[in-house]
Image (tube, rainbow, N blue to C red):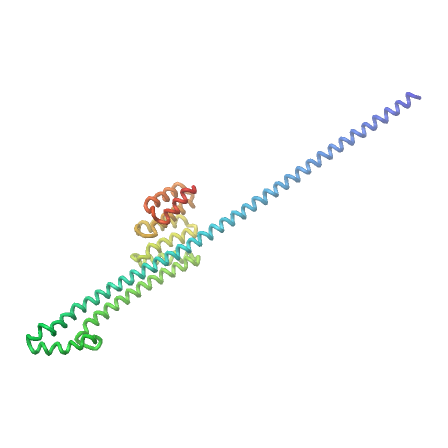
Length: 296
């Protein structure tokens, strides 16, 4: 009897132990599955965070590029305004100097012919003959009224012809300035293709104009704005070849360096900046070139 009871108790204990091990295995399996699910969730969250970060960097990069574009546009407008002011002042000075020199020549021509008529009747010609004394009586009142008197009519006709030439010169200068301003307005308005065509026509029409080098400079700038860096470099080099003493030469070299850098030729860009500093050390473009070299 006792043996039977002991056997039954042992059998129940073994069954209970088996149930505990099975439950333990199930718990461990469930825990492993939970761990795997948690890891998968963590991986997905990390991927989403990385995607969000990369998207944020892309947006930030786009904003930085837009700001760079805005800054470049503002700088271009500032350069345009400064250039317009300098050119307007220079053109005014040149026009006034030219007109003043022409007027001085005009005043010198009649002045040389009028004085001989005035002293002769007053002093030395009077005792020579009576006819001579009668002659100065008529020119004396006619000098202050050159518009009506026929005798001194030659000087006014010369003045008229000179005045006509001055008017023609002023008209040519005005037409030239209007053509340049129209092309510059196209550039400021962002119509770069039309600006290139207008500035090219200006350089062909007025190759000796003081504005020709500036027109060539803006051709290169417009091509750079179109991201045609190779053409922009060629246009600025054409400026340096045709107008080596132009005030725009340093800026042209700076733009060449920018185009070379955009094309991936950093070594050539550095050489151009160093050449700019060597040739034009006191220019504003040289200051910018030093800053760029220091930043690299």
